[in-house]
Image (cartoon, rainbow, N blue to C red):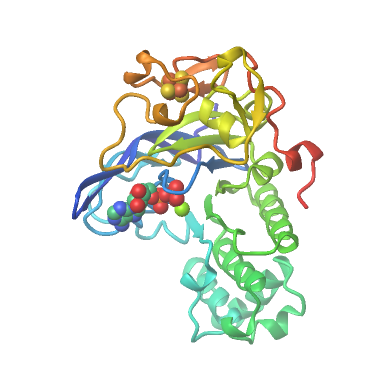
Length: 342
Ligand SMILES: Nc1ncnc2c1ncn2[C@@H]1O[C@H](COP(=O)(O)OP(=O)(O)O)[C@@H](O)[C@H]1O
Ligand code: SF4
Ligand SMILES: [Mg+2]
């Protein structure tokens, strides 16, 4: 197998807070290859964004980082100096949920994309602007030459998001991280942007890490999925396998089918909109399996932490009950089952 574009090994991120240390990421490992999409899913507060920021070298000062982040086989965490500098924007790029965090209100859309091209491709100003307009057209901004002369506030949310994608892709990064890139957009624009990411990935071989809470999006756009819960990976598998046969009760919960508590593993499957309870405070997580307080299958053995172990080839889960023996069969979200992106 060729070297993955990104390989994360035993990543830990700890913040000092007023109320004690908070370990937001606790031993996360994942990999994504060229031209592939790895989706990271999980409820809010599970450590998805912190994982992304760690990979990008964008953690706030004071955050303690451990483990390895290998880009094309080279670990950045262990290197002295500023190993991310010069790589961000060139090898690594990230798009955020709110494009205004990355766009400068004082410059036109064209100027911002052109600036990225000037920096990373060394183009002369005029050539950079011509290519910027081309780039804006490629991300499906209608009338790109005119839009290039407009400022961010003159553009719709969907167009600003496309400008940010154009900036990120201008330097043809080897790895693109998209953190909830379409959450703030309406479904039509959302579908267009995800289709655009797929297309560019196919064309340029960029590896994509797509953070989303929308399982319909995962079903339609991801090759591999990592389910995060309370700072750890609960389950990781090829997307089709995860939907066909989820092997962690948390994933089953996310997919919307929660086995009834009374009936146990053999019980009737009841569909619930969400999982009862909340993500634990990461300053004082439950000992053992972190999902235990919310898990219908929890038992005394769950007081010990289950390892993330292979349950089928390429399919890993951290649950003492795995394999769940199809208890969650049919737990595919309606949109994914219908094959629609809406
Ligand atoms: N700068 C920070 N300082 C302290 N705690 C943080 C900081 N950033 C994130 N956290 C905490 O880390 C945990 C994971 O956050 P995050 O990665 O943003 O979750 P997600 O993206 O999955 O919703 C949360 O408990 C959050 O409060
Ligand atoms: S290890 Fe135990 S508590 Fe954790 S998910 Fe599996 S059954 Fe539930
Ligand atoms: Mg987040």
